[in-house]
Amino acid sequence: MASVQRIDENLALLTRHLSAASFGDLLAAVQSAWAALKDGLGRTAMVQDLPEVDAQAERLLEQAERLTTILEQAGPAATLHVINVAGRQRMLSQRLAKQALMAHLLPAPHDRKALAAAQATRQAFEQAQAYLQALPLAGAELRESLQAAAQAWLALLDGASQAHEAAGRIALARSSEALLTELDRLTERYELSLERLLG
Image 1 (tube, rainbow, N blue to C red):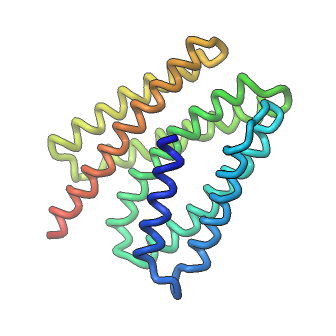
Image 2 (spheres, rainbow, N blue to C red):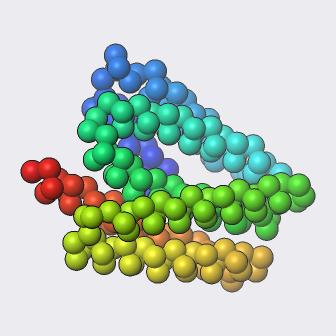
């Protein structure tokens, strides 16, 4: 699975480049949370197991965001904040897709909880996207990426609204992957733009 490989690669990169003395405990907490989630994903999951796997995913997110916040505070804050916001959009897009699926697959009361969480995720994504669009860094490539991400986001929302049907779930999965690709490109372009700006 591409997402599993990406997390493994990111954690390996962080392990190589972060100071163990400064960030070792935070990184270890992320690695531990990821190991638990990866184990849960590796087992044959039944619908009734999804809330526990989701809880493991939330624990991973909490630990990853703790590490990100500390790294942001330790570096050039404004620069890292922009890149972190852009990068976090990838997580939020995948989170919304997951929550939309869970809202239609899980029995009550988990379905209502997932739906409420999806609404909060949508709001967080759209607020962050508005922040990124308002930044005075938008060259032609960035504007193109922002527009492509906005279109892919609308496709994801359309798929999420149809997740109660099999065809809608397929559309949701496809649009989720397409949006992830656009957000990867957007994050890379913000990184490049900031590198040019800072010389």
